[in-house]
Amino acid sequence: VTLALPLICGNRPFRRLLAAYLLNSIANGLPATLFLLYVGHVLAAPEWAGALLFTYFACGVAAIPFWLRASRRWGKHRTWIAAMLLNSAVFALVPLLGAGDIGWFLAICVVTGMALGADLTLPASMQADVVDLDTLRSGRPRTGLYFALWGIATKLALALAVGIAFPLLEIAGFSSGESRQSSAALFALATLYALVPVAFKLGAIAIFVGYPITAERQRRIRRLIAARHGSATRPPSGSPAK
Image (cartoon, rainbow, N blue to C red; front, side, top):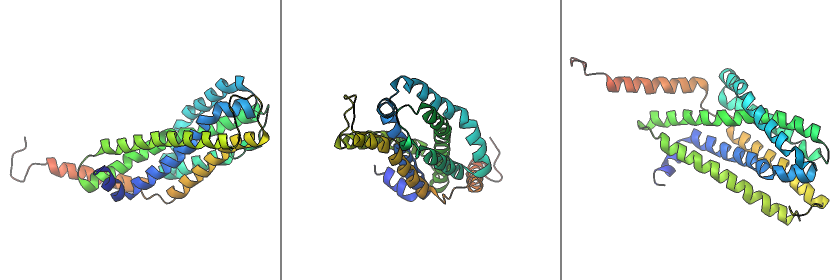
């Protein structure tokens, strides 16, 4: 803890990245937690759950090359923001769906699955960038500590998603053991499944707008690190190289 707190406080890009990642992970965790309930009770099509999940994740994996190419052209942070905006715009339509709207929800799974491809690649890549910044400033590799904090944020997001979803559903009168639910309970389920995640993603976007580590700055950081390592390993003038 004594090492982690100064590390977080001193690396502003990392703080912003970690905060945006945490909010976005909660936004992804809520639908993951409530997916089976949503498909079974709102869409009334539990038999479609497997196919819909497969479509979602398959589209996410298939879209990874596209997001990587886009990030090289537009920058990682701008590309990730664009993916979160795309996800939010499409997911905001989910509460309009009802029983039997499988075709529409399948289309939403395709688009949001494609946006997932950015979540799977770009935040981790930007984490490596902020580790480079810390290495340049401190002169010491502290990659393990950064990855530990990243892992804590990932697990915290999943815990918060569960902690948010089920107590609020219970307050709304939703009972997963009942086949018939009130309209208020179904609305609460749809809201927690779609609209609350959109709010979290918009919060992540607000934090991340203007993220300072651009592609050009990252290249400059890498050059400075390489130059420092080169000077550290170069033998003193007049001494024979080993």
